Structure formats: C-alpha cells, structure tokens
Image 1: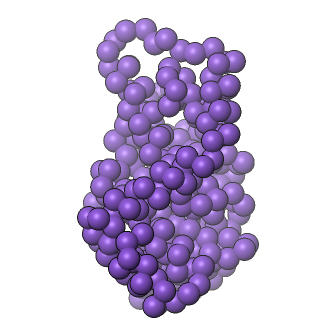
Image 2: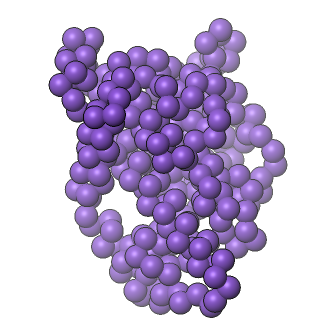
Length: 255
C-alpha cells in the first residue's frame, strides 16, 4: 500500500475491519480495471464477524471504479429491517449475499460478477470448465452449477437455494447468469476470479476455433488442480502486487 494509504489507514481507525474495508475496496477497483463489472450492478461482500453474519458490501448503484473503503455498507444478515432503511443495499445483492453470509461457512468473501467469458460459458448447454490447459485444470471438479435460472434473485428463498447448491465449493457457475466465487480472504477470492475468467476465455476461444478440444485426462487434471491448491502464497502476492499498482494509479480506494 502507498504511504498515503497507510497513513490514512492508521489515522482513521486501527482495527482489522478497516484493513478489510481497504482490501474489499481494492477488489472493486480491480474488477473495474479488468472490465469484469457491469454498469452499477454486481456485488462483492466480505464478512467481518466470526460467524460471518456481519459483512461489508458495496452501496446501491455505486460504480466499482469510484468505491472507497469508507463508503462500504456494514450489514447484518440477521437484521430484518435492512431493506427498509434509506441506505438499503440493492435487493438482489441482499438476497444473495445476505443469505450466503448467514448460511455458508466458507463464504467469507463473495464475488458475484458477470464477466464476459465466464458469462458466455455460463450460457452454454454444457458450461463445464473442461481441462484443456493449466488454467482451466485449476477448477477441475471444483465448480458447483446452477442450471435453473428463474429471473432476478429478489427473495431470501433464492439466496438460500443458491447457498444450498454451492455446498462446500468455492465457485458456482450460474447458468444464464454469471459466476459466484467465494473464499476466506479477499486476496484468494480475487485470485480465483482472475484465473477463472482467464480460464473461461481460453476455453471459449478454443471452442471458437471449431477444432476438437484436447482435454486432459482426469488424472492429470486432478493433479494439476491439487498443485494449484498447494501454492497458496501466490494469490497473496498477486493481490499485494495489484494493490501496489492501484496505489501508483489512484490510492483513493483506501480513503
């Protein structure tokens, strides 16, 4: 983090929650930088309590490229009055993220986006991430699928349905919709999202060639996925480097 951002962090409040705010704000800016965002829609959230029920999320209809740490909403998934307040979040965000933070233990950080290639893959009859290269193999047998899109997620029941489908997975391919990725930290969720979109791009470009796919064997694909999982320092370094790039361009995300 830049000296300016570090000073702001120390001056405003010296708590773990503030650092979580800064990290989540950085993820919003990076999502805009990589063109994963969609107008003022889509949402990222991050649990701040041990039980996961209190969480940070973007304000309603705020563009990702302008979000700051201090502007993130602090919500409680058990608060039934949330949507009756003037600063209520987007309804679909509340129904998805609120219910998942209430019910899905591994969903500390939740990234729900409609990135170009992931969404294109999610629109196919078979949206499986076939292991055709090192990136796609990272996700071998590690994706949950929702193939029953029924419109906007505007009810608690829909959020509960999605949480149940996710199960113990970190990634959900949402048919006719987009992708949902969760992890224990912002750094890991960001890294998964980055590689998932690149993997989807590789697969969709291979499909577009019209040539037969050279799909890995199950044994090699699983071995490769496990090798990805054994190198957990890389995603921390990746996110730290991306925050450093943000600091050089515009450190206001940490305000």
